[in-house]
Amino acid sequence: MTMRFVSLIFCACLFAGCAKTGQDRVALPLYVAGTAVTEPVIATGEVPITIERAVLAFGPLYLCAGTTAGELCETARLEWLESVVVDTLAVDPVQAGMLTGVTGTVQSWMYDLGISSQLTASEPYVLDAARQLDGASFVIEGRAIVDGIDVPFSASIPVQQSERTEVGVPVVRKSSSEFLFQDIQSEDLTLTLRFNPAAIVSSLDLRSYVTTQTCASDELPIVCDGTIERQCSDNIEVSNRDCGLSGLVCLPAKGCADRVVIDPDTEAYRSLRNALVGIGRPTFDWETP
Image (cartoon, rainbow, N blue to C red; front, side):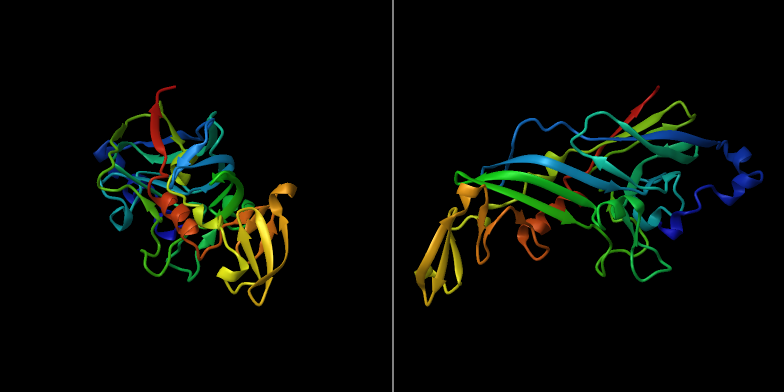
């Protein structure tokens, strides 16, 4: 967990400070939920994508008094220091735990995706939810139709602080264009965070995984012409097979495979990671039980 945010309650609250400011200690139920995606998501290039699995490691979460989170949020007003695996395709809310803190207004938020940076350690700490996903923050499986060809795919994306980000501070934070204002005056509130996997895959571009190559057009030992795998020698085709007949996809330079595994050095991988910290943010729904 992020060490600089472990202490939530002001030291003064242990003595007379809270009485003077009118702050009381509170604990509010925190729920997480997904969004039903019943139709294919139309992604980049008008490519329809069917999401079959989309699970997210979420937490910890901090809610701050000021309008800007990050380093300016030295002490969170409310916090939840654990993590949970969220099935982002499941609509029914699941209680993740309790937000604990003090009364007052919250105007900003920040959270990690199962991997937290610490000021006291050189490497980010992998929480239980990310460990359940083999060290990833997000795991997705689905199918895309590219030029009429069925392309099953999967990706496993860790989201964590890097040398270019602020060490010791959660990686996903409220932007200046997002609005949050909630006055916490009692424990008669619940917070539900709802994630939408359609937003995460909407900018995904899988068109590069379908090619129309011949042995003469490339020096690779294996090329793909749609679903056809062509084995080449000295730019001459020596054999071929149709991967589609076996329910497989043809991967450039690799041949028939059961799915596209999106690698870290690809634009598709970067698109998913950027969406997780950008357009894939949850909605914050406050309710009175």
